[in-house]
Amino acid sequence: MGLFNRSFAAFHKTSHGPQELEKGSHNDVKWIDDPFRGAKKGDSFVFAQRHGADTLELFFDLFFVANLATFTSYHAILDLDSFGAYVGFFAIIWSTWFQITLHDVRFSRDSVYERICKVVQMTVFVGFALVGSKFQPTSKKATATANFRVLCYNLGMSRLLFGIQYLVVLCFSIKNKAKKVFLPLILCMLTFFSAAATFFVMVLGFDGEAKYIKQEVFAVWWVVQLLEAIAIIAVSCKWRTLSFKATHIVERMGLLTLIVIGEGAIGITKTITRIMGKSGPTISGSFIICCSILILVFFWMLYFDNQPKQHYGTIRQQIWSVLHFPLHLGIVGVVEGAQQMTLAHYTLSTTDNFRDKVADYCSKKHYDGVELRDALMSTLSPYAFEDKPETYQQSQVIFNKVYTLGNTTGVCSVAGLQAQNATNGGFVDYDVLVLDFTGALFAGNGAKIPKELNPTLAASGAFKIAFQYYWMAFAVVLICSILFLRLVRKSRKADLFDNLGMITRAGAAVVSIALFGYTFKTHNGIPGTVNNAVSELLGGLTVVPLVTLALLGILSVDQLSRKYCNRKLKRQGLYVEPPAHGYVHEEHELDDQSHDARKEPSPAISEGCSSGYAPVLAGPPYGHETQGQSRY
Image 1 (cartoon, rainbow, N blue to C red):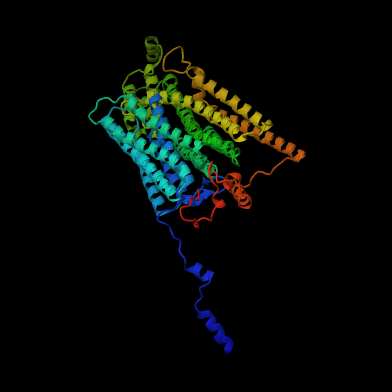
Image 2 (tube, one colour):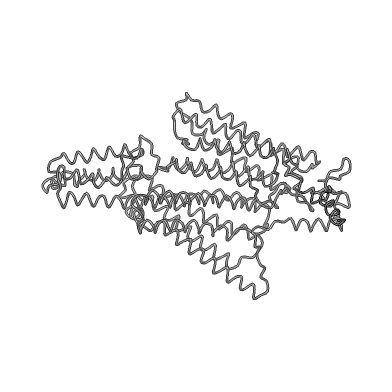
């Protein structure tokens, strides 16, 4: 009985042990947190709040990919103007994301304040989505000027928030008496406040009553963003405390690269639906789609197989980060271009089949009247152009042409064909019908064509410009890959892997640039046309597989040379196993330096010198400073 009583008492007695307190605690989100708590401490401190991206950063990335996917879906690249608008809008959303990331990897700590900032930034990106659907700087419509004003407000609000965020960091630096970072933080703050003021003033330049807007006004968007990027990067290079040395910037850029590649997967699924949604899979269509998927996989391998695993220099890292803009733009260009090449093959091959049927009805079977009309309508029926809003107008043009041919007596008779050939040098009526059919196919593939633009002419121009930016974008990706290999090598002597990797990439880039230049050669000197070789490439199966084979060759050489170099190092006893979990942060290195500093203070500290940044752990522990003493 006594044993029972003791057990009963032990069960019901109040305990205040660690386990009991842990059960009663809740996750506490601070109103605002000190970014200096995340500073890595050693001979010099650097801001780095965590080793990897948190869920809030990943959540925000979804708004970037949503913008990119929406803009790509609504913005057809039909000519140089639309291509320039695409590149310009991509630069706007990318630079905004980049500035957000540069702040977050150094100063962001989860708090109510930080979550409010993220909500504002997400709202800005939703505003970008609204602007992107009608973003055409060459447009002179009143609705376009309203769109441009919204963009200016969006950019101004985002830069105003950036300035406030750096102001908050400055306030904490004053609190922590970190005098070394006062000036760089003030420079960052003034940079963004100046940018915000510029964007807000730009609103006055987009007057809804203005009949013409000078093109120089549009350039201000990109000039300001370029200058602010240069300023922030320069500050981080000059004041190494604000560098990205111990941050997770490598992971953030890698995640965005993954998102950009993943956006291509969304486009491929849409392309499959467009070309094989009704007719079912075909051998040629399936082959091109498989090649497009392989391009995505190979891009992933090309980037992540050579991603830096350790710190390789502060300034080099800044350059490496900025080079992701042309890399991401190039990846988007190749993936979008591959989809357009797939649609071009589908459009032109389907047009060839339609042309063959028309020729069979007229030149061989000599249909006439109702019989000809019904045969042509039966051929057009599976495409259901009249049921789609984007092709309805073009369907009426085609049907009117078919009825005109059906009401023309003897149009397909032997005598009638001979008369047309003698008069026009060919069968003009049927050529026009085939061209109208091509335009309807192009419009039905999802291209948002302006109402005033003929779909047939739009298809011709779009396929040509797609062929051009496809090869140029591929060259840009390869050049960025070469620069990445060069930057991350640092002082290590180049080996066979480096040399062969650069040679294969450079060779493929030269071929890509040559193909890009070849598209400017016209057919018989007629402006706006392409030569027969390019025309055959567009209608054939080789354009997308060529890039796939080039990437396969580059990656195969990388794999073989990497194996050879590692085997050689193992024989020499110099092989070091690479990190298994991606990028290695330098926290341990800094901790080792701090440990050494505790055991044996550096001469600068012992002599009371303040040149450079004093190590934090050389003084009192964090949170136990003496009155008036700075920890930094």
